[in-house]
Length: 111
Length: 124
Image (cartoon, rainbow over all chains, first blue to last red; front, top):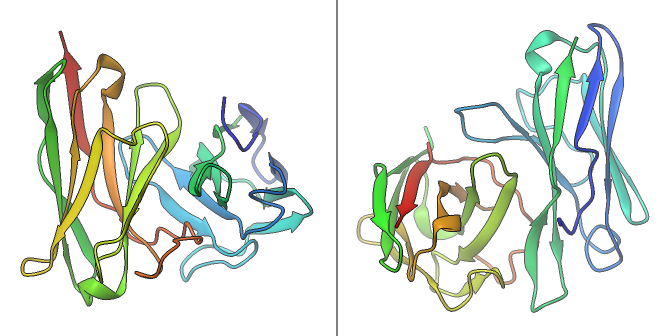
């Protein structure tokens, strides 16, 4: 059971907009910045969104992040086949002496 | 360019230990901490801990606390993660990742560069 809750799976068609949610609590998302990672099989995860809503250099503007209270979301617009991957949210959690927590991951399928 | 290059795959027996290395290059090693993240087969990403490359401060995930030790060798810009008393559920791909700074606590899980991953297989 992950501290941050994400839907296990999501699907969309090319060109569509999809949103992946990440629900936490006051000890993590409610107090700290949220980060998003894209993970393709056999490769290392890739930083997609930093500090709630900032895109690192090279990340297309089709990807956007937002945060409100104890929840965050990742939106992908203009869905493309290469977006099919697992997506993870992450944040610091200050309970239990502090640690980084990940969401359980969302498998995005592009139909 | 920034690179994090990890050691090769390991096959271990239950109860033994494994030590994975992560050699960094392309940046000033002691300005950025190193995190370790693992992914068991069919599971999600799991954070294991962080080490400050500046002063060696560490913080470990509760799940592996007591079995894990993270160290660095600043003479070779290499970080190490040792996991002891291995169990079958420690079978996973282990990644090192560069953090955003070497200051404690590491409240920003900003992992901008990752190693290629090291598969550790634990069997009985």
